[in-house]
Length: 489
Ligand SMILES: NC(=O)C1=CN([C@@H]2O[C@H](COP(=O)(O)OP(=O)(O)OC[C@H]3O[C@@H](n4cnc5c(N)ncnc54)[C@H](O)[C@@H]3O)[C@@H](O)[C@H]2O)C=CC1
Ligand SMILES: C[N+](C)(C)CC(=O)CC(=O)[O-]
Image (cartoon, rainbow, N blue to C red):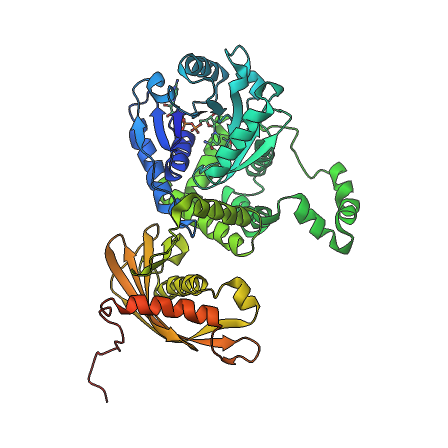
């Protein structure tokens, strides 16, 4: 069943929510009175389309339908989820919530993107306060998974569970704060760091660029994978957190922070910061910076996926969810080539020529071979018991380009096999267009002796069934081909 989200306020954050829902298969209705809203949201969506599909190794569901509505009622009346992302002013939020509640379904979720207001402030005077909660996301919403879900006892646990499940379904990480506080948790940190940075610039201690360098070359990447407390636990050495606190506890009384004072945010300070920021980053347009940011975020999250850690472990979980939701077709028909791959080209598979690097064709084909091996029974349990296949020879033809974000499908024909041998033919497609072929010859191996050995009777007979059925088909064009560029010497 397709869900529908209503996005009320389609600016930076509303646009990001719209993209997150759409690219995860939801229909999205947007209401924003700004005549420029559709153009602006289109830009956010373009950024999301070039980065989010390249984050995962599993194809996302078919994109939902996007509709701009001329009235708030048109946007919210059929929605399962209503996300308010209007400007951060309490009176605008109250007016918007009241208008939404007049026309929405009582069981719909109403999430507010507010950076700082408490849910009780948003619920005050509402017709159905239980429907309203804070769902505070992080920019860019289509890539960063964190959502601070801040509730009051009015919301009730059932509704909160529904909210968490729906957010997880679109790849997000709901962090449920049971106690409300101004600016929630993450924005209190951001505000503290921001205030300290303003002082450092104002006092001429560091420029905006030097402050950014202090973050991105050091503790910023540390925080991205371990956060604050785990990082400091490690910094305490063998004795851990207690030793860390014994060593640095006294610093709390030293003048290490000016946090309690706020610098006068006057024109001089604004001009100083804006000027330094122009010197630092003015060579790039905002769109270029957004794309650099998105590429880096995707690369970092994918790196953490290889470590099965933090945001990377979450990514793996979301991919499992996408697979379970049926985006990966399961092959059964022996008379046709078997689909052994259906995946998106991730952003970090792109090379200096701006397309999928040649090595990734082999990676995709190798994964397809693994999939075929599993289909004939050479799966993880079989391999753990000591039998497997090693590749002895490979021939890949690159017929066309493919770019990050495109979906590639691999169809496999068993050209031959039985006993120790396995001879596979992979065809890689983008939609109906063939973009590469891979011919691979493998030998079954005893993993203890590391020498060729016959496959088990079960694997052997499953393989022969495919070889026989595929043998009825015409031999694929290009099978058995060698490289011919000049006459042999
Ligand atoms: N920009 C950021 O980094 C983050 C902002 N937020 C929160 O998200 C909310 C929105 O912020 P941004 O997207 O940054 O602001 P924005 O200024 O980019 O977008 C606000 C949008 O709301 C529209 N709008 C104004 N009145 C409206 C109404 N009555 N009905 C429908 N639309 C209306 C405006 O036309 C505009 O397109 C705020 O509550 C903010 O605190 C949350 C996380 C991060
Ligand atoms: C600056 N800000 C308070 C709007 C920041 C946020 O709310 C979250 C973010 O994305 O940094």
